[in-house]
Image 1 (cartoon, chains in turn yellow, orange):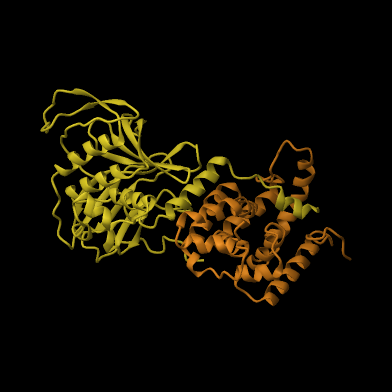
Image 2 (cartoon, chains in turn cyan, yellow; image 1 turned 180 degrees about the vertical axis):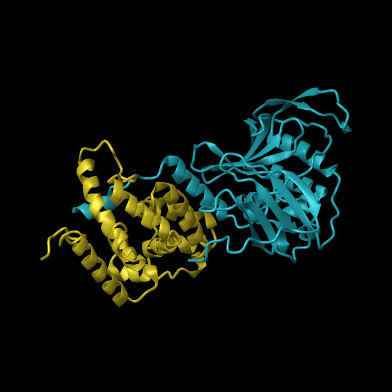
Length: 289
Length: 186
């Protein structure tokens, strides 16, 4: 081995964290729908509780009709994914719906956390316009804000969602028969703005999948506590996290390797309706290789 | 064991399969990029290489069972957007004698190696981008001229001529020592 070969070979390898981050970035990119869809959903109200088996976690549950005034808290023991998702579905179904015009955009303002960059996503309500993302520029222009197109995507627009059935059984028939694919389809959709009754139906569909299970308490990026609901497929676990107090969907986490730690993949944020989007930054994306 | 081409074919319907390609080749791509730009940028460009490859997987020609030339081609394209950073990187090594990407600073061999890096880095900084591409794809990527031609989308003859010129320039800068063989030429 001569000096030049040695110089080329004797290179410090990436850290495990960098390697894992690259893999995570790839897997996130391997979900083409995910990039354009990081929504939030609105806090709902109440529900009834039906307990079944499995892992138990205790939460403070807001009683039905809690509204804006401080309700009495009642301790409820959550023992199954079905129960948690049933509560979340019941709350979602009581949420006020948004009725934006087709030519408007739904804006998702997402906080940054860890390696997740914050930013704003603007999704065309009727799916006929380009969806837009505005957030930190990739290197080497870090520190600036870049605005780029996410393309048109009718099948994740609010107008499309309004065509889907809100009966869980009927909705399940529109999804892939394979449980893993159905899980992925639904969990991706949960990150969008969904009509409340459709959101409730999707949560009930998830509850009926055999691989769905309750993980228990999960720390939230904001410092509070959440409840993890997971699906395990091919040795890897994907987890939806709900706020323990409100049952609001907070975001999702995933394992990069079997038995590995969970890493946040997406966080919900605030949602609003807007008529306009920021202009695209010229040439902010690398050219195709 | 599935070939790279078979994995890519699978990933067209099962996107997650592409992660297996990452597991196979990420370290090599990282090493190649880190050698040219340092480890910080390499972390970013390694990930970007595979993400870009994933998005282009439908265009992959399954005749090529080994995906390395394709991946190195994408990585090289990304590196080319950082030509000035690369030049600064090589010149800094030449000036300071400190190579920030060497694997183990504690290694006793490193002092000697780093000293030799000074001359090599200065010589590499003297090549044009195309010449540096073929030389480093050969030495760091381990690709053959035919594979480099595939990677860069150029004719094999172009690779040979660039490689020949790069080696001559390096020999001139290194006092007659060929960078690939380590032998001395008059």
